[in-house]
Amino acid sequence: MQKPVRIAPSILSANFASLGADIDAIAKAGADWVHVDVMDGHFVPNITIGPTVVKAVRDVTDIPFDVHLMISPVDPYVDDFVAADADIITAHIEAGPHIHRTLQYIKSLGKKAGVSLNPSTPASSICHILGIVDLVLVMTVNPGFGGQGFIEGQLAKISEIRQMIDKSGRDIDLEVDGGINPETAKQAISAGADVLVAGTAVFGGGNSDGGYKEKIQRLRG
Image 1 (cartoon, rainbow, N blue to C red):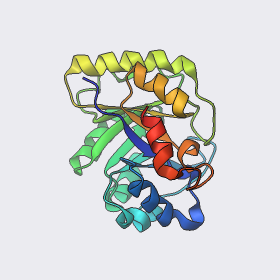
Image 2 (image 1 turned 180 degrees about the vertical axis):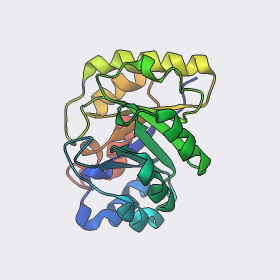
Image 3 (image 1 turned 135 degrees about the vertical axis):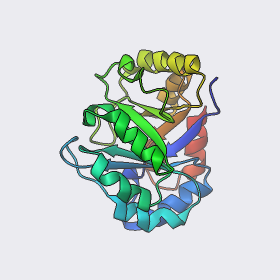
Image 4 (image 1 turned 90 degrees about the vertical axis):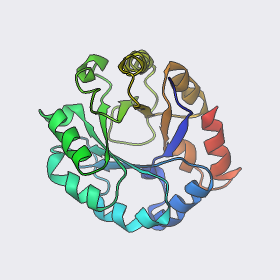
């Protein structure tokens, strides 16, 4: 059964000169999660932030920190993000040969474990790990940069994974990341998503023109 839609603004699009203030502002504006895109310049063609930054801003708000690790390897860095007090840690199924072990380890440390799929990765790749995951993240852009256009061909994958989750009977969040705006948000929700990651659609233009609150409300549909 699909859950209420939650919005997870991606701080990749925030103003890093005032990151703590931006996180506080989206939390007060009604964001459900804070999405943290961690990139290593190896698994994806960009470098962003690490656990030190997560730790530095963690006390700004009580809402969950949703940390998306676009890095390879993953396992050596899990402890650092746990120590930084991430709530959800998501690894890519493409980032290493032992995703089940990675998910087990994240959960053994008391955190929620997510698995992410690149656009070219089929839904069937996760069928044997649905028994352990807390979240499935479908990338609707090729990961590595913010501000890309939504790949509509991923809607069928979202629907397929929605059916897989419902059939499993488990409490698994279905998150979509990439090119989310008020129009594509409706498409993703209709396909079965219940968590939407949005960077530019929330932070673009700053906290004006109705502010972050209005932008977040528009994404909920």
